[in-house]
Amino acid sequence: MRDLSEASGVPVATIKFYLRERLLQPGEHTHPNQSLYTDSHVRQIRLIRALTDVGGLSVSTAKAVIGVLDLPGQSVHSVLSLAHRAMAPLATTPDTAEFRDARNSVDALLYRLGWDVSPDNPGRDGVAIVLSTVTSLQQPQLTAVLEPYARAVESVALADLEAVTAAGAAHADRDAMVETAVIGVVVGDALLLHLRRLAKEHISSGRLSRPPFGSPSPERPRTTDPSEEM
Amino acid sequence: MRDLSEASGVPVATIKFYLRERLLQPGEHTHPNQSLYTDSHVRQIRLIRALTDVGGLSVSTAKAVIGVLDLPGQSVHSVLSLAHRAMAPLATTPDTAEFRDARNSVDALLYRLGWDVSPDNPGRDGVAIVLSTVTSLQQPQLTAVLEPYARAVESVALADLEAVTAAGAAHADRDAMVETAVIGVVVGDALLLHLRRLAKEHISSGRLSRPPFGSPSPERPRTTDPSEEM
Image 1 (cartoon, rainbow over the protein chains, first blue to last red):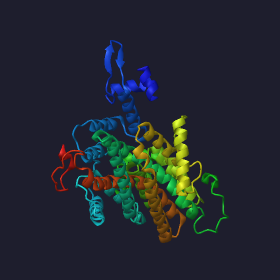
Image 2 (cartoon, one colour):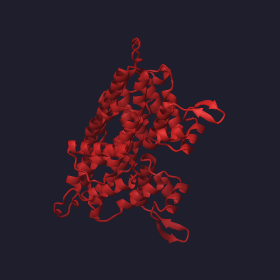
Image 3 (tube, each protein chain N blue to C red):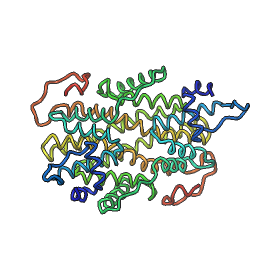
Image 4 (tube, one colour):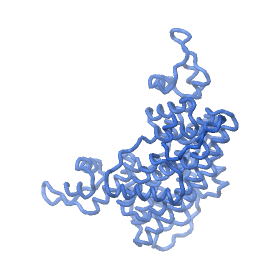
């Protein structure tokens, strides 16, 4: 157990917690007080860390995602569908006219985009909830971002697919593809949001750094901390 | 209070909670047992809902973001920076060689992209944590997604900027721009992740739905639920 902690860089107490929660498979019992752990355990622990720390998943969601990884004989596509469902259990959708309108707009958007998506993909309701919120906040300008966002995630999904295909080619087995696909889903969400923070600063720095509708402020060097403007 | 609950669609108990947590400004006291609430309160409640329910922010983070909105005289850019920092308090970064390598790769990526980003943008560490995780999981294929992801969020940030500019043009005031900008940050994250689920299914449905390295499965109509493949 101590060796496992050193190899994975995760404290013994945390590993015991993973075992108790059945996130981690137990080692082989060799002595009454000793278990044998292998490289596969180190790998499993790293995966759990990726899902919970980087992906921000709860323990129960991480357990569901890992459970999906262990299903035998699934196509990569269906494992991905299952992983998505495990990560986003269907939210209770509000039974309001606004929500139904938003849901119809989402269906129309998907039709316009030509996207081939099953009717029960939880993303449909997810986008509709965002859309009805934006409408209730009287932010019509924000609905205009839908199509550019959709085009952007389309290229993100293509990049994901290429990574999964490359993993399959490198290892010539399904398990490697599935693992890359699922890690890509979870870790990719985090990556997207962090990169968005960077892109937002880059894009807005030149154009929104002056007080709008006021007199132009003098040019500042761009290495200063924006919070110093206070 | 009961009227406010009806107008906003939020239960009285929740509104009391918002008042207690100082998320919501108190109404004007008109009688010992009565307060006057205005349309501005309805709007505030909707904003709180958007931040907590749709954006998934904790109460304390939502309070920090709303606090940023109320700062007078800030440029839209600096309000956005502050909102980003409120939403992503600096994570403690691991002091490992792997993390430092990843951090250097992120700096190199930003240089290659030509992005103008301050050294303390929390996205730098965020991307580096994802990158070092992917490396420790031995998923080199996933590092190849960095550049396409970056290009995608660049167009997302441009769409955000256009929405903010449109809000400014429609209302000709800074507060409207700031509000649209901050709502866009929070709600946009959720939108991006939900749209990604849809795009992923669309992109992978045609290409990964057959068991890899096996015999081709017969064509299925794409309206069936992928989970039925189990």
